[in-house]
Each structure stands twice: as structure tokens, then as C-alpha cells.
Image (cartoon, rainbow, N blue to C red):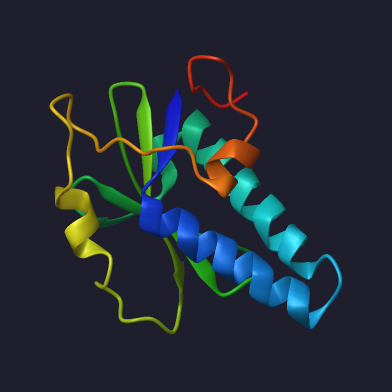
Length: 125
């Protein structure tokens, strides 16, 4: 499955990792690892998340007050937000409107996308 992060979702994750690493050594890295595990699980079973609105699902992180919001279709997974639970619940909604002709928005490589173990075709390994 091709996995991409909306640019703003990548920024949210990078900022959260930096914040938690500033609080305790390697805590942010634990957050990043948990997000990776959630995304890998979503790639295996995209329909398992809670339906937030038609086509958009949410999976909760176990250890941190964050959710991963995503869309999945035709072998593609698009992470729309890595949302802290204290944020306004619909702040990310305009992100689902950004689409490429194939149906999902494209993302240039970001530090977090580059850190994901993606295969040469962009699929999650």
C-alpha cells in the first residue's frame, strides 16, 4: 500500500516528536514509533479505524493523546492529521479536499516520510 502524509500531518508529527524529546530522552522517538506502528496496522486493515466522516477514519494512539486521521482507497493510504486530542476536532477537515487527479493529494518527501521504511514504490515495508 502506498502511504503518504499530508505535509501538515508531517509537521504535526515532527513537532510532537520534538516536544516529547525535549520533555524526556527518547520519549518523542517512542511517539514516532507508535505512530509508525499505527500506520503499519492501518495499511494492513484500513477499515478498522473509527469512521469520523464518510471516507475518513481515525485510530487512537495507546500511549499518547493523539489520533491518526486518514483516508484509504485503491491501495493508497493518506494520513491527513496526527491530531492532539486537545485540538479543535475538525481543524484538519480542509486537508481531505486537496486531491491529485488520481484521487489523493501528493506529498513531497518530508523528514518523517523519509524516516518511514518505505519501499522503492512508496509502499510501507
